[in-house]
Amino acid sequence: DGGITQSPKYLFRKEGQNVTLSCEQNLNHDAMYWYRQDPGQGLRLIYYSQIVNDFQKGDIAEGYSVSREKKESFPLTVTSAQKNPTAFYLCASSEGARGTTEAFFGQGTRLTVV
Amino acid sequence: SQQGEEDPQALSIQEGENATMNCSYKTSINNLQWYRQNSGRGLVHLILIRSNEREKHSGRLRVTLDTSKKSSSLLITASRAADTASYFCATLQTGANNLFFGTGTRLTVIP
Image (tube, rainbow over all chains, first blue to last red; front, side, top):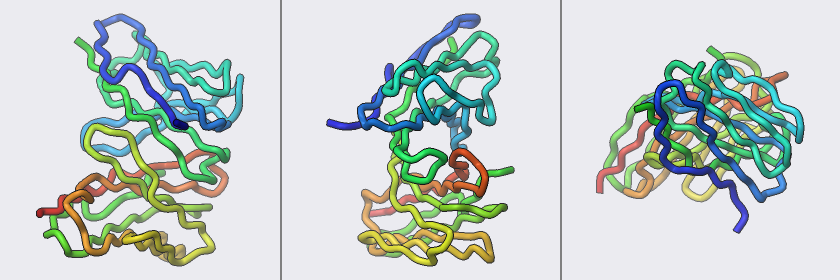
């Protein structure tokens, strides 16, 4: 089955901890994205990567970090510098760069600070 | 804001009726896409319309694009209870590197 997989589905973080959200795709897509969704809100772009070993900040990158060492993987780390990390995080990939084609989304990770 | 804005924010209809959602945006675009999200799940792509297209169909979905008014509409005909979801428009703005999403329309179809 081709697709994009996020794990874990639910994640709990204590104050001051860093946590890493996993995103893996086997669609052979060059572009990958991380979005944050707050209740009743649209999606806001955190980071995106058009190609391996390259990534760019989105609109709300502060307190987050990413890496793109492999084409298939684009993990997101939520650092302790992110003051309000409780949200639903969505990873996506697309064949075409720059949103020229449809984006495929994972099922999301719900992060809660406890 | 660079986001599109959907209207209405929420829509409730009876099964079998048509549902129309609108999206407005602010700058020139290369394409506009509609996505669906079931509660607590990821988004699913529905349809993409390019800036030089005016209308596209896919099954029970019809999308129109008016670049002069910077607006798009999504029509779902003969709605079903399973169509209950949030619907988002996303725009690829000219010169940008990624999609910008609106805040969504929450559609409820009552059986």
